Amino acid sequence: MRSPKQPLTVQQATNRAAALCARSEQAPDDIRNKLMDWGIGRTDAISIVSDLKAQGFVDEQRYARAFVKDRFAFNGWGRIKIEHQLRLKGISADAIAQAMTAIDEQQYCERLVDLLRAKWRTVSQREPRAAWAALMRFAISRGFETSIAAQCARQVTQTDGEQD
Image 1 (cartoon, rainbow, N blue to C red):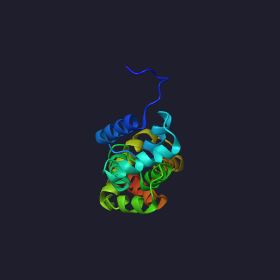
Image 2 (cartoon, one colour):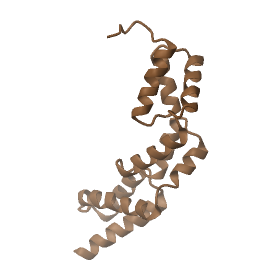
Image 3 (cartoon, rainbow, N blue to C red):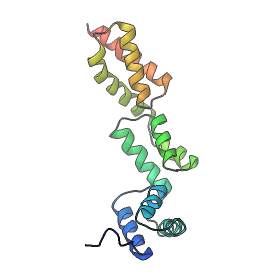
């Protein structure tokens, strides 16, 4: 086991970063930050990330596609929140726009309706305006567009009213 005070060499850091990238998709900025945390200088970290990109270990577009898919499917995030998080990770606007096309519009609405139905069970006993506001806040906090949130909330509240 290596002593925590002993810094990594550039080759050791490159190998460690490549192993990390082989296990899962990583954003270029995340790898650069990890390298600097491991004691690698900024210029060496930038050089290592460039080498990893050239070798195919780091791919911004591939990372963006995986991020969009995972956050939509598993976290139930909307486009706004996903895009914001990708921007925070330093992903280019072109890569984000291309990755966002992977979200099917029908699945997007169905996912939001499912989320809102689950939320509706907890707020349906409130005064109607308060329940509606709670649904809208919930959808917007998940990163869904206001217009789509309103449309799906209407669908959930109308469906509930018909079942009574």
